[in-house]
Image (cartoon, rainbow, N blue to C red; front, top):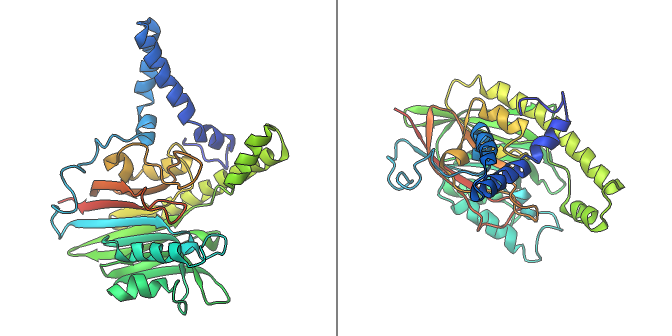
Length: 344
């Protein structure tokens, strides 16, 4: 977990499959306890020494206070509601959208009408002259919000690809953090003036896993364990593990120098047992672990139980509520919301 994949890339595969031994250990515990075998001490000891791993994969909400301190009864001057959402360029590509653009319209409308104070949007898209994809007008300008958009590409229709931080509070400072060259995979930050305090919000998108669901299905159906398709999947996963290790180091080096408390949102494209997760969790707390419930999977696809989107926060803040909106299915990611407050 502490060894970056650019030093030893097989560690990425081991950590990716970590849930399997954890689940097996739990079943051994139940089985030996049922049979009253002295061997039950083995899975009990494993459970004790690996509890932090279990906690990352299955949150029981003990660290937060979501049932008592919700957004409705927190003092207005200290609360901060944050939405993090990979909007998949609002499904602008032909193979993603429907004929009437209904899904795209509904996604933009859902984001625009969300009551959060701060939006961190990955794979953001804005096409100023489009009646459908003029997202800056519909989400930002219509409601008089402050915003910072890091554009990575502009197409022939003047459509702008990138990421966005949108805020009800003034932005005092902002910047972009490149991972080698500026692509969709980068990070950005904005310093928000919130009453008498300043909070730095990061938005990031790390290297994709670079595999398609159909590739996995095809490999499984053909039952070719060492075929070309499987080797390609392994190669792509390996490259992703290595690139994300470098990228999260760049992000970490920047945020650890922040003069303000930080909230870090984004698409990690990695599991909670990974080096990338551990790197951020070294200095920051995870909102799902602190105040969420259950597995908290954020990927909307056929690959089950993947929690690859996260919100982290510094110890100067408290999280009182965390929700994965699994009923919002416009994108291949589910949106996340959390409520934070600044400690006295």
